[in-house]
Length: 265
Image: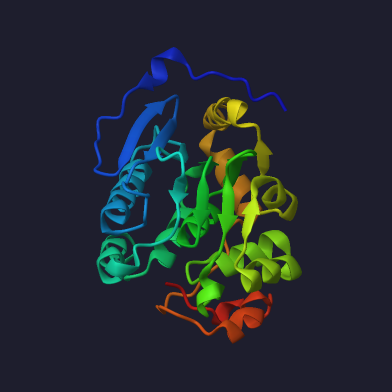
């Protein structure tokens, strides 16, 4: 597939909105979002607040069709939530979903009319992995991207939709390998397992994602909606809240018949 289309010159404009933890620009129907929440892009109140505002703003603008997320931090995409500020970030998530749960924030992103792409060049673990799994597509730098769901090492399982997404993308056996080992996975292995679309050399990743995003944005929006509906792209994490789930529940959560019993963050 040739994805080398460039945005039309008259569509190139800077976004007028500013955020505390996000750097944004718009070109040709694509909103490029760079996550910058020092010191390590933890998913805390400020970042959740900005993501809520960004999603609301982008969904209200018919000119925006594609969101591309990347990180300004060379070492971290999103490594996890800020565990010291759980109530605060949940309260921010409730402003979008009506319920204090980042799992429902991620679910909202999955169900959005916007096509979402994650460009991953660094470490993404825990809730960060669940965030990129909620995106429609994931592309990673072969040399530097690292993926993981470390929660089982603490005796709990991912509560933000990660279990459901991984089981759907990888199959039950590989999802259980990820969940029960709490290990780190290279971009190449993540690609082989289905965690991401492609692992690409770092020096071509950005150009590939930009070209792909521009190409998608130039097609009629109705085409994207129909394609995403037909692909049944989003699992349905339940709406109740839980901080921790016993690791003995992991097998049940990876079972297609029992996934609805898993509770989100």
